[in-house]
Image (cartoon, rainbow, N blue to C red; front, side, top):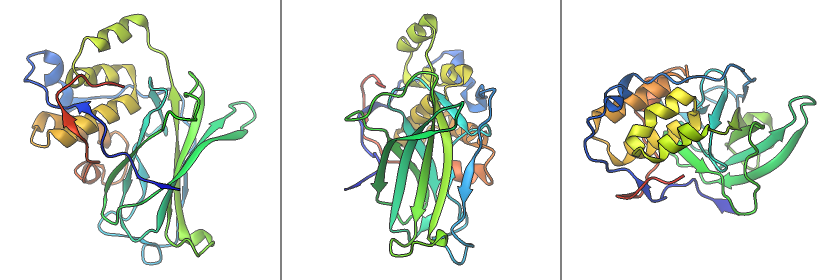
Length: 252
């Protein structure tokens, strides 16, 4: 069955102007990165002319820090990646649990998504139905594959990139603090705590529903630049997933 990348979950996105100093610092956000670095994987589906990718940024790229692993507090996080202009027939998303000692991989989830032919940032939320929550302090490897031609089984027909996610537990103090803050105020706390997935997810939603907010734009560009991707600023300014914007408390 084909599913579509998540595009509409109710979230708080419209916030009144804040005077807290925290908001003034967001345009220069520096995310605390994990000390460990995990291997990245990339399989190129041919050259630019041969593959189904095109445009000024013909590259499939995950939104992850240079360590290739991001932390989250969510049992079912959202994953973000940049998809270039393309003629792909489908996108495969998969998540594996990986034993750090043996390297053994166990499939947790996989699905097929319908790609947009236009370039932009895609998000996909891990569904909570039928899947166990991410275990705390357990690394998981996630991958995105752009399938150019479903009839062609050769490596040149598929472009795959992969990265890592790890769920962590917060101290009671930090958890309590976050509950008292608006989504806009939570941004700097996520950065300080190194919660990459929580930060990117919250920022993307705020940006999508407040496109004229220059402070949020500055925060978003600052974070995406920390991926160390080629032309990161151009990627940061590309289209974001559409969201349903409502005035209520942002929930995990």
